[in-house]
Image (cartoon, rainbow, N blue to C red; front, side, top):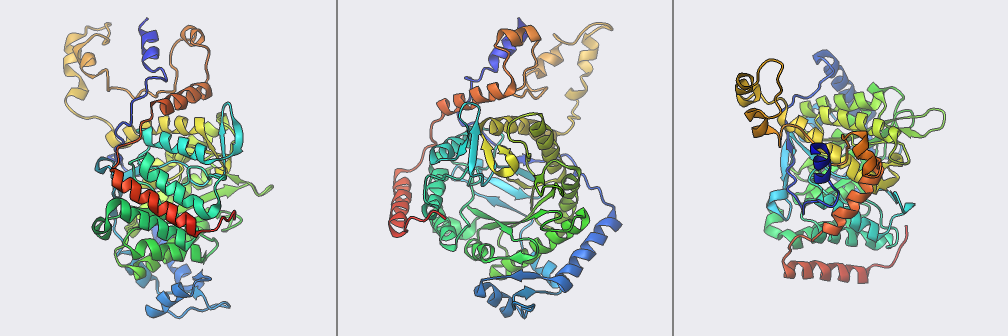
Length: 509
């Protein structure tokens, strides 16, 4: 009966409203696989690339002028290749903060990015969604809103990202306005802004100024953009214009080399790691030339691929190792890190998805990634956001939070001396005073895992985790209530969006 009672307490309709979502301040040490000689060897290779290979800054004359003003003459066949003294590049990067706070409109949900802190955010950028009953389909704005509400409601997600799924029923030229407005009104967690075109980045910063006020924006990071370099060794104007908009206003930028080893980088993991660091450090230096002290997050998305088909693979040993090494390199560079996530090439929430996501996320955790996009919801190599996958992944994030944030309790009570005085040899501790004091918090209980006996499981319908997850996210949405918001602020944001939409033609690319 006791086992059945516990099962009833975890019924999916018992969903708390907008629980606290404190980000993690880790107590567990990082896993650093390389000794000092190994890490210095990679750093020396990074310096060699900065000085001898360089990174091209293409299609943005304003970006090249920033380099010229700093005394660098672009070279190469296109006149856009930046090579520079590695020591100088690293000195510029040292101006970026080791950690910073991104304010949320609810101050209790603000997050610290960098140092010993880890922040989990959902998948970003998928054009498709999937759920157990609706199957796979192009995402709509209704799907986007539902996923955003789930990210807001789940306590193990500390940040809502931006493009949890692409709302393909809204013109590309306008959908960023609807997405940013939704993040600002349907949630009070921190979020990202748009980056795909300079005016869209500017819209995001302008809306953040309406939400927080100019004085707050002048002195705090309230919004960030997330951009990818065009690997190998190319930074296009999407990146440099986003840096100018966000960093130029004192806001944050996350810069991520997206490297499939064997395609956008050499097939060897050491070389791809070196390339990723070179690209990221060069953009970090650029961001500090734009505005000294602007928040910068060093990103890494290094994946292996099938050399037979060209398809990306996830959760494999090579990217797992790269997460660990990039963590070491980022800490030595004094920069916050973004890498990893619950990544999988699987199309549904099956054993492949579980194995690959677990391996990828565990290495992300141990590597010390400070900001983790794709922590929940990723399917199909990032092409699809799974409703069930989102809540399944987020459920497991709770165990990582406990491991990282608590480690091993070494308090006097944890050694349970009084329990040994109370329980005789051959007895049991179930009713001891120590157990009664601690039973509610002693073990992490995942909401979606079923640990009951088979009879109880069959009696409850023999549900697998996908079915339980489907029931849970639907129950969560039924419990959703938007966080309170000042009416005048809401109206000002809506007026801004309406005005900008009236100025923009519909464009679907």
